[in-house]
Image (cartoon, rainbow, N blue to C red; front, side, top):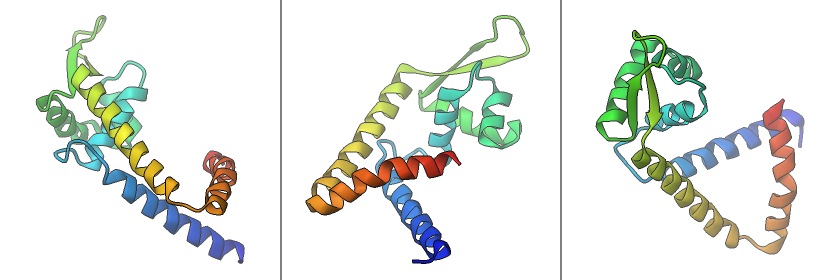
Length: 139
């Protein structure tokens, strides 16, 4: 298969896999944007509105409603910044951590069930492909 055709086939397969995994979520009230913001909140050091927005590639005013929605559902909490009274820090609440863990577990179970349905040859091919896909993701 020519490289461009291989790239197209891989891209389509990865997009479809991503969609399949996104359907496995615990709280249907959360959009993909909300889940992505939670992920950014987990990774950002000193998670202020501006830093979460930057991690998501949006302007702070666009992130306000997202964080308000997550807070209204009890998935995040806010606190005063310890050294700058004008700023607020956000953190994922215990309820939010539990929802993230449950969503991750649900996705893993769904994927594991699909993998269990593969024949041994396809499963072995998948195992060999994972390091290659990881290296592609890092380029």
